Amino acid sequence: MSKNVLVIHASPRIGGNSDILCDRLIDGATEAGHSCEKIALHGKKIGYCIACDACRKNGGTCAIRDDMEEIYTKMLQADVVVLSTPVYFFSMSAQLKTMIDRLRPIYRKMTGKPFCLIATVSVDEPEKLDSTFDAMRGLLRCIPEARELGVVYGNSAWLPGDIRNTKAMNEAYNLGLSL
Image (cartoon, rainbow, N blue to C red; front, side):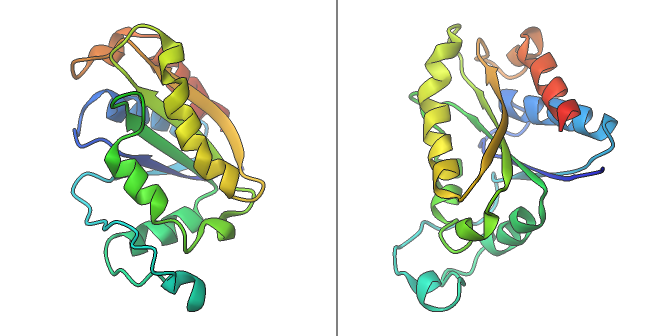
């Protein structure tokens, strides 16, 4: 059965290592017969959550009018959501964290949604990504019955393109294929 896969790329650098892994996952998912769309948070206008609680008082509509409205719709329509980030100081990028914080109006509407997680880092030790993935899983812990389908550890990638020489390329492809 064909699935609608939404890949959210949260790097400020288009064409960087996490972006390359997203494309590789998309290659696998497309080969498996799924439809895929990638959203690059770079260039999107996404304001910070201001904790005004308007979304809780007015039926789930955020008071901030920006590009999150499009992302809300696409996340709710997706059968699988992929979150991808480069790692800064062993955590996710500010772009991804800002987007996640803005999910307050819809996160409960994503009950049972499956997710895949991708992160890239310059260091050689894959376990250095654990704190990043744990922070990303904070969102999954809040979504009722959210499921994690897989994780890609993109370590040993400092300069753009370094990821091409790692096993993460095959892992991303195979994860996409398995969806």
